[in-house]
Structures are given as structure tokens and as C-alpha cells.
Length: 207
Image 1 (cartoon, rainbow, N blue to C red):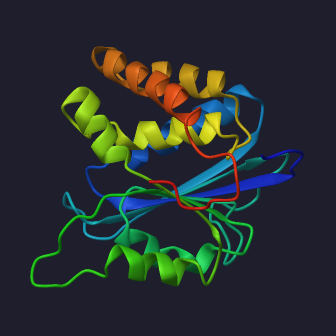
Image 2 (image 1 turned 60 degrees about the horizontal axis):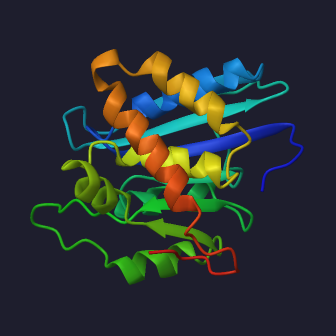
């Protein structure tokens, strides 16, 4: 649980088309609603759909730089497993990894296995939560397009970020176009229901 803090650093990694910029906008709006100082940045790899995307969100009492420094991430939100391997540079033993159990195949390459990826990340932090967000959304809504919203909502309900779920909800309503409200609000509420089922012990990987 996040308590008193001077600043909070979030890194979101994934690929084009997974809605990382939308998540950045929602986090930024929620932080502003709570009166936080805020800086954000987005870094793109390949510009087309499917290219790597890295988003930095920093908020708190006073923020000077938009970029998370090496080893300073409080939360790393991974929308795709192998993209998290590009983020361990920002991790420290207190960093929480919240990862979508989802892998996008790369043509002509053999991606690292799930176990190999997790073993590498465990060298930097033991706080790893692996969630089948894409599968959960696909099963519930017939699409996994809201997997990022699911993870972000889950993070707020699990107190992995120092922003109130109500602020996240208000930000979703402001940032998401009205025609997509229904599925995103259902996703938010689904995360609220599911978080009650997660282990409250020391288990770090939840599938």
C-alpha cells in the first residue's frame, strides 16, 4: 500500500495499439484532480502499430523532470510480457511489476519464455504480479482492447498507486470518448470485483 510520498514514478511499457497514451492521459488527469504536480513523457520505437512504446508518469508535491530515473520506478505497468525486459533498468527491490500475461509474437524471432522473463525480472524486484488481463477482458467483453484499463483500475483498487479509484473513474469519463464509456466502465467495475479474489499473502505472482 502506498502511503505518504513526495513523488511517485510510473513506467508503462507495451506496443503501439495497446492504448499506452490513453493510460498516460488518464493517470495525468487523475493526478491533477487530486492536486498533484505532474510531468509525463512518451517514447516511441517504431511508429507503426506494434512498435515499442514507453510512457513515463511522475506526480507528487513537486516534479521537475518528466523522465523516471534509473532504479527509481515505483510501479512498472507492462501491457506485454517481453516489453518488460526493456524496463528493468528502472526497477529497484521496492518496485512493483504489474504485468499483463500477454505476448505478441515477433516474426523470425523466438521470444523469451514467460519463465525466463520472470526470472530475469526477479533479479531486480520480487514484487511481480502477473495478471491475465487480456484473457479476462476477451472472455468478458469479446475483446482485449481494455486490458490496459483493467490493469490500471486493478492498480488503483490494490493501492499500488497513490490515486483514488474514484479519481481514476472520473479521469476515464473525461479522457475516453463517450461512445466507449460503457465497455471501459464495465472494465473498471470488473477490476473492482476481481481484486477481492486476489491473494492477500506474500505470493508475488498471481495468474
